[in-house]
Image (cartoon, rainbow over all chains, first blue to last red; front, side):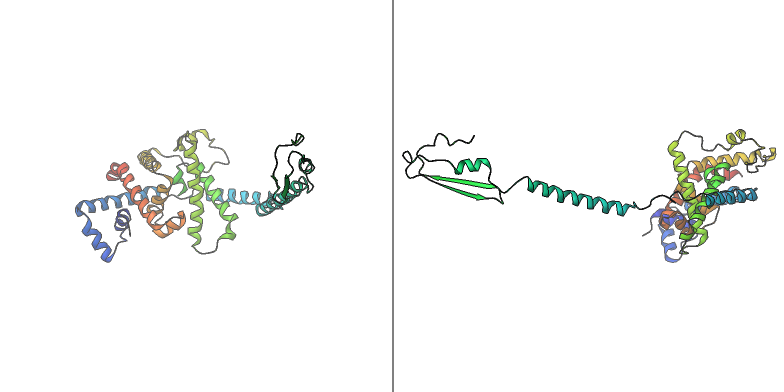
Length: 170
Length: 161
């Protein structure tokens, strides 16, 4: 679907034909004014062609010489990239970056795991070694459930009448 | 064509040289999908329009400074392209030329390119579109507005010539 501007330009340049031309001319509100405008635009075109179109090079030899000299100069200059390392292309930089990141993550995981040894903490040992006074709490039972993977320890006490004085962790 | 775009002979020479060097460097990339003429026009237009945009961004300079530049350049300089002095009889013509340059200077680089290609180079819409890397519809639309503007600005000139 052509816009009005496109149709108008095509009409001015004689590029509208057939049904398109008939439809466009029928759609013009003032055909006489449009024809005057067309004639005016053609005058402008002829005027521009006359004033601007007939320029010739007065010094083509000079231009050719300059151009040849410049091309020869640019040919003589070594390519800026020659002799320098071109190994660091963008895809290689991206891959190297990704590989470095992966290596860093692996190392970080290893270090974190080593910082969490499997042996029991001093606090847990203290709890497991605690004593329950049988005179005060004769039916007391203590159960310990530990999930090392989840780093969770649950201490379940039953029948405890009072806390032993040395129960608190230090 | 470049001169009509930039209105300065020295700049036109430089841009023409830049365009040809660029074309020479990228000749291997020319695959023949368009005509060589259109391909080289595209390079010329890209170089010129880029230059005009950069000049517009800088902004402070006088755009149509041929007269100023000619005063500043030593006429005996070996690097100066030959420029014949305008005779007195051509004063009126130079005034007309100044009006045209001024009017064209009020168009955007893209509009300038389209109207000059169409009116002075007699290029077809599809050739202009290929040279500028845009659609034929865009070319026609730009032509519409460029013509309207130039008609408003130059009507008294071309009516009286």
